[in-house]
Image 1 (cartoon, rainbow, N blue to C red):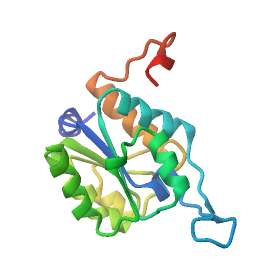
Image 2 (cartoon, helix red, strand yellow; image 1 turned 90 degrees about the vertical axis):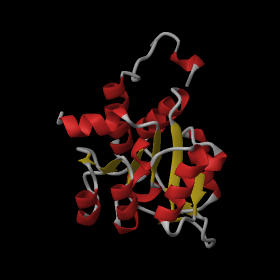
Image 3 (tube, rainbow, N blue to C red; image 1 turned 135 degrees about the vertical axis):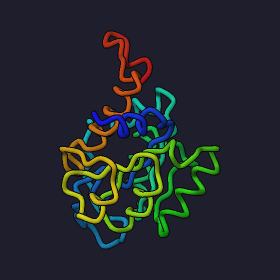
Length: 181
C-alpha cells in the first residue's frame, strides 16, 4: 500500500456513505403507488461491516438523496445513529461539513463512499474518498481509492475492512462476537 494512502487511512475516525449505488447496486424497484413503495437491496456483508465499525467506535453516517422509512430502518440497523442519518440530502458537501462540525472532526478524519456526481465534492473534501468499482468516472477520479467490488456487492465491507485492518481494529473474538454486534 502506498504510504500516502496509509497515512490517510490512519487518520480516519468517522465513516460516511451514500446509499444508492454504494450500499445498494443502484437498482430501485417500484412495488406500489406511493413514492416510498420501493425496494432496494443491501448486501449483508456491507451491513455487518458498518455495524462492526460503529461498535468499534467509528462515528458512522449516511448522506443520501434517498428517503424512505425502509431506508431509515436499514441505516439504524447498520449502526448509524439517528443524528448522523441525512436522508433526502441535497447539497451533500454542506451536510458533510455540518456533520464534521457537529462531531468536532477535521474533514481529513472522515472516509466517504460515493458513486456519482452528487458525491464528488465530498469525495474530494474528505480524508479518504472511496468509490465503488462501478462508480461513474467522475466519482472514481475524485476518489482516493476505488474498490474492487461494485456498489451493493461488498464495496462498503471492502473499504471498512481496509480502514480497520490498516488501523488494527478489525479484530474479533469469533466465539463471542454476538455480544458486541
